Length: 330
Ligand code: NDP
Ligand code: MG
Image (cartoon, rainbow, N blue to C red):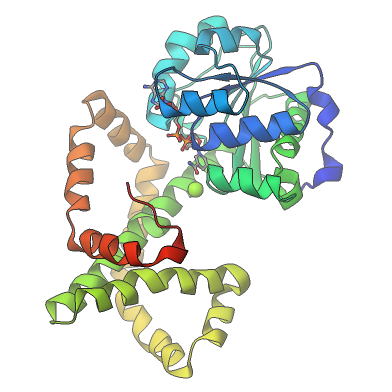
């Protein structure tokens, strides 16, 4: 693990960092770097709320081309599926000699969608948390832990830049782990597909449907299967599975040990291995890239259909009554 004392912000003194995209990660990283005393320019297309946000934070957003021309370090913080096109048209032709190319997720580097010409190193500094937390933890004096990885053949100087960058966004306050671009990309995709997003969403919906189909009130099903998820996850976060098991009743703990394995079965574990294999072979990346080339029709239709699941309506109604939870509507 690398901490504050392992990183020297001076490595970035006199260098300009371009943050491409003022979204979730962009707005957080740009502000943290600036507050750490570094020279930051922001590229953000005009017309949307993120442009107005950048202006309200005191930046003067540039075009991608203009920001890249000025920068010694270029961090692409656009949605992963757009990075390759923007890279080809607006970044690669304007890179300053020796400029370091960065991202917060390795997808496009690892799957060959963003390949800089010789003389440009690739560097990943990936915060292990959403952008709003990268900002709010930094403001509180803390920081979200980060991963750092170098592209093939990157120089030792680029690693120093990476550690300085991580320090600038607050990452070395939380701790920085060195990894490879392959490991970051593959574990990140696996985590979100099998556990964090795909796995948990399906588990919640299956539990909710089971209770409602058996005639229980949807409100009860919502509280049991979705709302309480956070309370349990908070216990995992603070003290691991053992703290959750210590904190819940013995009855809940007995139910956990005797019933959990009937939900995540050998078949589920086999399927997890298949999902990992599809990530490692590049099949998932090909699917996602092709989906976007075709206008992402299936993706958008699925997003619409998923919103129509009855748990959505039940939840919206209940969350409106829970003033204390800082509820959000999409
Ligand atoms: P967001 O979706 O929050 O931000 C996207 C940015 O790209 C916005 O500034 C947006 O501007 C701009 N943008 C979107 N579409 C276009 C377009 N067609 N042309 C030009 N600009 C466009 O992205 P994230 O911050 O979520 O993700 C950025 C990177 O960070 C990704 O590589 C992601 O994997 C990685 N990452 C994200 C994490 C997260 O918590 N979100 C966590 C760790 C890594 P506009 O507002 O105008 O649309
Ligand atoms: Mg992740």
